[in-house]
Image (tube, rainbow, N blue to C red):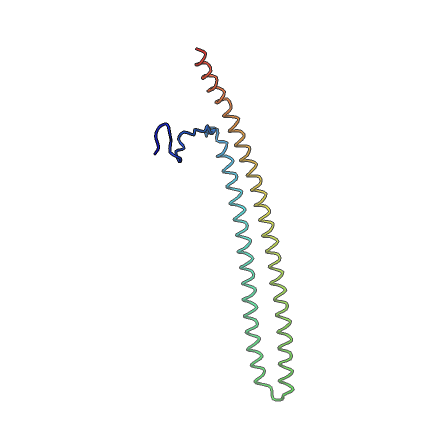
Length: 168
C-alpha cells in the first residue's frame, strides 16, 4: 500500500525534471514553419500534377488507340465480306494482322516512353521534396538552437536570484 513515505510504484510525481520551456515570443518557429509548409505543399502539388497529367495523357492515347483499332477491325470484317477468292481472303488477313502487330508495337513503345518520362519527372519531384525536407530539418534545428540560447539567460537569472536569496 502506498503512503507518503513509501510511494506507489507508478507514482512519478516524485520525479521532477526541468525541461527547457521555449518562449514562443520570438516567432522563430512560426516564420520557418510557414516557409516549410509552403515548400512541402508545393512539392506534393507538383508530384500530384505530374502524376495526373501523365495519367491523363496515357489514358487519352490509349483510348485513341483502342478507337482506331476497333475501326480497323470493322474495316477488316467489311473487306472480308467482299473477298471472292481464298487468296484474296488470305491477303486481306495477312495485311490486317501485320498492320495490327506493327500498331500494337508502336503503341506499346509510346506508352513505355510516356511511363519512363513520368517516372523520371516524378523522381525529380521526389528529389526536390527530399531537398526541401533536409532544408526543413536544418531550419528547425536552427530555431531550436535559437530557443535554447534564449533560454540560457533565463536560467542564469533564476540561478542568480536563488543564490542571492541564500546569501541574505
